Image 1: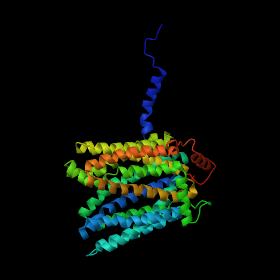
Image 2 (image 1 turned 45 degrees about the vertical axis):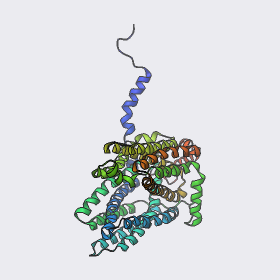
Image 3 (image 1 turned 120 degrees about the horizontal axis):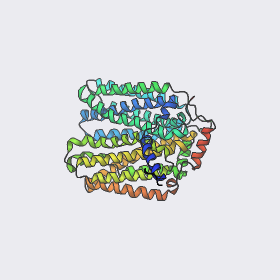
Length: 449
């Protein structure tokens, strides 16, 4: 006699189980925070650092414009900052492989606090000097370029190998908090209390971050590390180019950003195309909101092993979303697809960082972190120049839409060219397997007891 109640098939049972587990799969993985004191310190330091930096990000160009009335003078600050970033980013990476990374973080953090205090002092003068802002800005860029590779290179040493995707997502979240709250706070301070107060908040953030860095345990260099030199930097560059799976992380990101970086067109897009100038600020924040949503639902990323394919597909989604946003008939349509683009870009970033942190040997991690910093700086800068030029030659919509389409085509072509990157699998990749074995054998690359 057949049963009088419905019987679920095995497939239906598995489907219901997957649906029940979906919230847990999406939930942000907090295990690195629970298991590693030094990761908690790094995360807290990064949060206050980015918050303070984004406050100054608003104040500094605004002060230059007030003093000069020149957009060219504001743009020149970018050129002043770019040269030290390129030169000292590579040297800072080599230095991070040769010295105690905690000590370098503390020294460069203290230097940034002192230099920003110089901007604060200049802002309190009856006649603030523009040349002082340029000089201090150049030195701040130098200190940042020397510090950033050490901070990035330290991450694989403070968490377990299997926790790296979660650690990358949490680190990205702290940066996004700063990028969302910092500009808003900076705008309020500049408009109400004055530029000096904005610099003061940055000084406070840098002091707190440096004190947190000082509480880290010592992280001496690997015994196989080379002394900082042109030869050592060259060895890092050869390593990056020689590993085609690693090369793909740089090339895909640079292609994506160069082809589809529309930020410089937002003022014209809001005023001339969408006829909604009051929503300009929303265009700037839409991508950050999308990135934040992607990060807070990134628990699933730790279950993905084909990181190369994930980077390629996410970057193609970024380009496609930018192209659709360029066709937007209304500002809200554009905001939705800019948020989608921001989320896709964040997913790509999580998987790129995971490849870097899970496969690069510790004795070369600083130098490769310097190269990474350049790769994600050069692409957006070039992309802004490309989009502005195309917009002037054609139209704003054409520039945004064509850039998104070219991004999809360029990234797809890159994945065909770098087949090793497309085929990358963290479970079988020889570099990932080696690093995983080293960590399990007790190498100094995990959270302290």
